[in-house]
Image (tube, rainbow over all chains, first blue to last red; front, side, top):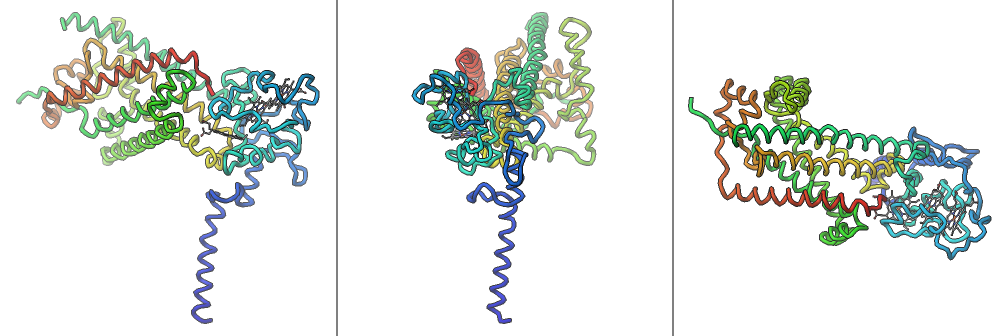
Length: 214
Length: 276
């Protein structure tokens, strides 16, 4: 084996070694959203859970305890959700019918229109298998239009965030519901203790100094 | 024994840390409020000082990094101050901020005393409310840091956690900020400075020193320990010089006044807010 051959092999080995952390760490920002089989698998797991052969048949299954449910029965299995809506026309504002749907971070802060996410007519339901909103491909077909590198996991963010303290949220998004009440009781608790404490202290301080003639 | 009339309570580093906390906390509160109230007149006014929504966000993020940096520096400092050979005393002794059974006892005693029952507790170096203030900030900063970091890097976060944790992060970040700001302004500023015995300004954290005579009333056990162990001499301090005193009076009142304005405006404009 001559010298240059050896050098060639060594540098090749170094290159391969250098690629191992890059492939396994998941920190390769400029590549596609999925870097290894293990990661691809875990990301799919976080978006869904039910497969027939390789095809996901039941999107929106919960994975972690406290995850948003998204399991309510909806009309979303159809290619055109408005197929039965009598007065529907693509010209009417979405919010004139879906009154509360504009209350979300994207519409309020990002000035994003409904159509930038839900697309042109016909608007397909999220559970329609071929819909861009189907959680198999929502990350790529919807979120990634603006959020470069969006993963299925990222797409589990609940865009239309329910009112955190609402009774319904307890089943639809338990973690949000309990975090809300945890923080609320923390805030109330702190002030219930320290507000009267401060007022009493203030009064006592006043009287005490008055007696001392200060 | 020559008498000591003033002693050091906060070292220069303590005071610089506190000043850094005031500055980053204020900047974060203001830019954060601009974002939260962005659809109100007040919010747009605030945002315009910082060059708009986007640049206010960038400043908010940088101020957040600075505050975290200060937090880390503070932890390192605390570690150097611990005496590892007698770590028990160092952690649970009277010079430590770690809450002990004594604090709960003193809390009860003091509440009774508010109503004229029994005597006021003779506090050691740190009273229970001072410890509470400290630990509130101590847990608040990491919580705000972690949730803030998640929101700065949502895509990277979703590689480790499911994306819906961003919904939670947003809620926690806001709630903790609201708690911290209202506590600081209502309790920390109002009660700290506007009691009869501290009015017009509680100067300790700025001057760094306290009068022994005053402190013997509030923290009798501390003063007693210092004079018994002879540490009083080492802590001997000079009163603050006039120009410095003027400076921190102006600064202190600027912060207090803007704090009160802030909480008033925040409460008034909260009726117009959109929580999204």
